[in-house]
Image (cartoon, rainbow, N blue to C red; front, side, top):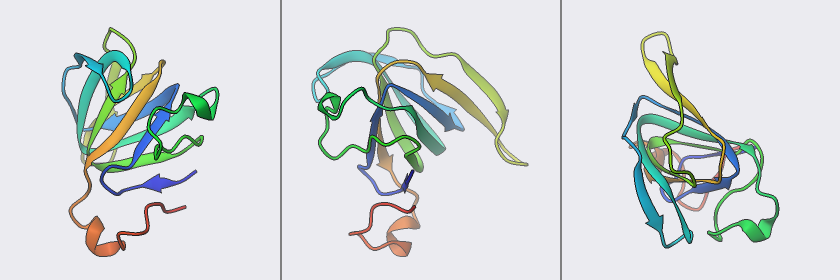
Length: 134
């Protein structure tokens, strides 16, 4: 289990938990990078994505530098999430902190998440060659 904060860090899995404070409606896309068709979402404002079920084999990994271990987490200002399905996942709104609510949803199909914008203070705290914190 590791947490990733740097831009362009990504995860690939069969099931994931996603938490964010703002989510765009899913857009049906044919993702040429992954070679798959499904819904793509933008999750903003303190977004996170955690792997719940790993890929069947490492050969199923579509992006060479993706993280695929159980419990790996992406945390950032904005995450792009691709789900290989044709319907939007069911979401729930609940308290995430004592002052803010968040949108929670679970994916049940192949999921690819990548950090679009990292938190603004992360490059100053972490050197660029370090990409994970355990």
